[in-house]
Image 1 (cartoon, one colour):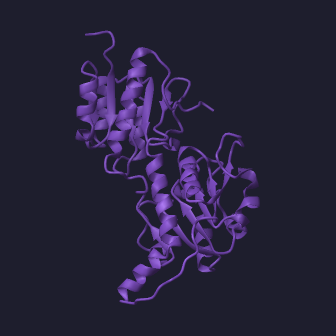
Image 2 (cartoon, rainbow, N blue to C red):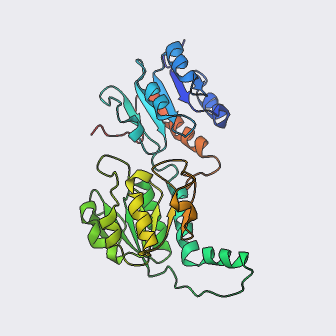
Image 3 (spheres, helix red, strand yellow):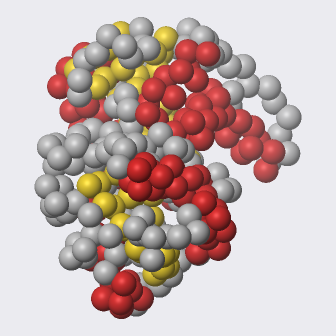
Length: 320
């Protein structure tokens, strides 16, 4: 067996999404697919993989990914997606952890930009008029010269900011680190967010979920927002105090919201968001381009080339 042969466990229920891509690029690598929850443990025992490629999805509970990452022979875990809070217990002194941050960022940013355009252009209101067969023009003020506040300037937040700038919007940013290389008109530290909120016509949240960001966008922050602002969350549901958001919408402090992520998913049938005509709900699908698993697999393949060659991996998660 060639010395560079690697054993890779892939936790994903649709192997045919990218099996051809990986087998063609790595004919000497032993790939095994755990395509159901029940097969993860058996695959770990049978092959004792060195590498795990794990795509978090509602069809695979968090426990499956933690189990795979904790395998005794595992040295590297590649996550499909950017968030890695579900692997918070992984010992990063023993296991190299990489994610897919940035792979889908342009497409999620496209969805966020589309939501702003649709809301600002009164397309939701026109849809309501269409149902009533009502022919009435609704004037709008253009997005150009309006202000967007991007909360969290990682790969996605930066793409959202770039799209907004191309539309002529003024863009403010709030970020954990205040750096001069971020392309925004003004930059605030996260703990100074209340200073920026009164200026923003649109607020778009792009924060990773951590202990520090749980319910980070809370009642005081909603109260600090500009009256009539439009709120967007496509990051993690638990970053936002959703009860406070419901209250702000009911009080008409906000004009509306686009929400793609929720603390409980699927969103329960009785949740108020379903029946709010000023809220657009999508099922955690803001970056769901048709071939998204294959895009993750391409990044994994590039990193696997690097792993075999002993080169630094892309998107390595810091051990802090």
